[in-house]
Length: 117
Image 1: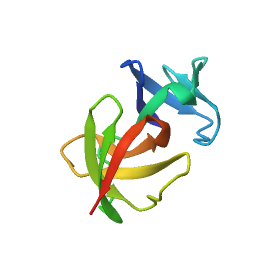
Image 2: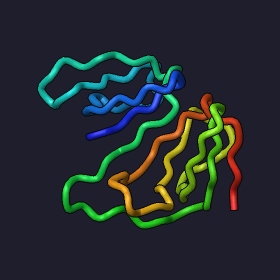
Image 3: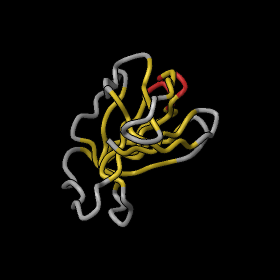
């Protein structure tokens, strides 16, 4: 999965997510599919933006409309098919379909507020 990872420290890291177990305490982010992955602590990650492949259509906007406010004040809006209170995180499809982002994994620990509806 080609991804862009946003950390709590404000860093933006691009690469390929290896062994994408989002419930794991660590993530392996490699600069390319054949490179050695950098190990990132999931507790330091705010969100993972999964990028669309060239020519791939964005997924349908399904589920609850959500607006996420992170602890740093940044916001992202979209639709979440699996949003629930609690849990490690949830997926959302961004409302702005002009980007190359197919979906976003949001870590609950980095969230200040989620407005649903």
